[in-house]
Image (tube, rainbow, N blue to C red):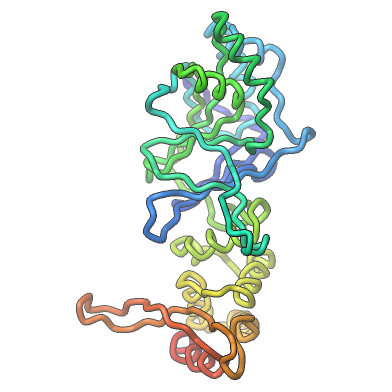
Length: 346
């Protein structure tokens, strides 16, 4: 069934800028983005909703999802869709095959105990498959007793249904995401019983990408510093579209990376170059302040006592007949000043 939502409350939506996805349920709930460093996989982090923030379904919809008819389910879903943003939605009943589905919930990645907490990734890293379903609950929120309840219900013939929100981007369909909005415990029960999973699918068709600034703001609220830095430094194609001069939040996040990161990636370097090339007074002032922060980077010292700062420099490649970014390590502030002059202010 196709439903045209014209009076949506904009409570539930998915943002996608061609690189990262962000699920919004009143506030950012889940973010995922590709590794972009040679691995075929994606990072994924979830922020737990408080009880006050959770979207509760109506009693009639909950009843319909347990054992209602198709008409009862569709009626309940139509009301539920008023929580979504405006647009066209396809709603249908189907099954998630047990043998050909992957479900991921945010579990902390294993880390070395010697790694500082601020450098530990809180989310999950999963291999890229043709299709993945992403939980919107953390692993600690999965209640074993609730799973057992649904296992017993299913064994008795009940067929409770989860709700899957699939945001389809026609410009990049392979990177579209399916989020589990409701029914995590139901899915766990079916999985343990090794059964196909009957589900309600809500599909939102999208022909355009979301603004990169909106994605990054959502991610900044949800992710830890190390996670946000990874996303920021890899989302290089979209960062040029962000107006940093009028964005204090993202500029402050950038300043923190300039002062503390072990590596300044091409995405950040190109931001600095762009503000120099545009040449307006405001942009030059903005750039000068950022370069001051870069010179304070904690991995540099005047006499090369520290490990150094990893940056990229453009060098001409005879093979490719163009400039290629090559990684280099700056040991001290003198080398940094020379690099700034040759790379940023050229």
